[in-house]
Image 1: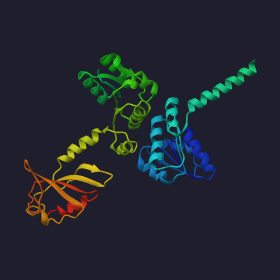
Image 2 (image 1 turned 180 degrees about the horizontal axis):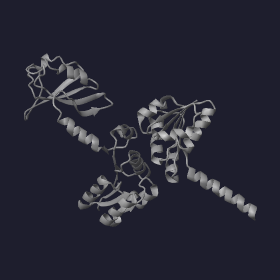
Image 3 (image 1 turned 135 degrees about the vertical axis):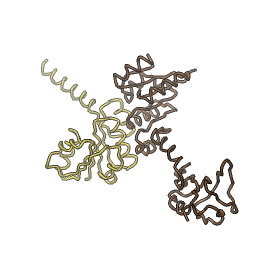
Image 4 (image 1 turned 180 degrees about the vertical axis):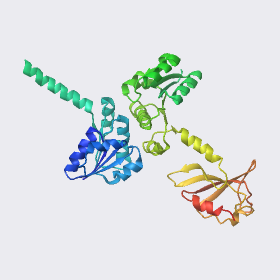
Length: 138
Length: 221
């Protein structure tokens, strides 16, 4: 599969390495050249320096024919705009977007976006961990 | 009842806009997320200044978005302005949303997502400059995107080969129509026997992308 990842922080680079190791074609975009260091020397995909709102960079990184587009920069609004460009303008078949703010995550997932909200996930995981630890105590 | 204008972004544009709207008698709320800027705004605007990230729904709600007549998104970040506009329009059903485009390259994204009207300092100034460019330069007046037609203006240069020629002898292609001539302070309705003069302002309707063809027709001798 062809996978485009916008944002090469811990999450973006981690996914890139995983899909790369599985033999998929992976392109990664980040506005900082240093972010490429997160991929290490063995990464077989391509790294593009640029911002995700830049249509030319998105095209060069293959947004027109990617199977999956993952958007995980550190800015919620950047992510939401890039996800909309991917879905509305380039008709990317699968778009997954990270949004920290639960309210915006909720609003855009109701509009049909595949939103991953780390805050909500952490709250759920914390709650479960607390329940378990509490049971062990009592 | 006073109209309520919610402005997001307390930079130069937002601050000056807030000041002038208040002078005009509007009720204003101004949202700014940088502490040091907010403190200045608080001193000038008092309770109308609101501290917080204007892309967060609870900040927008605290600022009164549910009862706002206008939402104006004028931060320095285009993605923030886009999301603020979408939330205002689609989550809070605000009828009048105005967004600032900082980088004109992002205009297409605003258009694609149906965020309008937009205002861009750069595009506005560029249009003014282009209006004063001499000769041959086509100024786009109106763009009928879906019909693939545009209306352009150009000035006949002194050296142009069309000077002194009749309109019927110009051999304009069928994709082009000369609809109006501004000559000194008069308006001339074009007809075949009218001769073109230097400095005539021609208003032409044509198929989009015919600019270079038109330039060739208007070229020097």
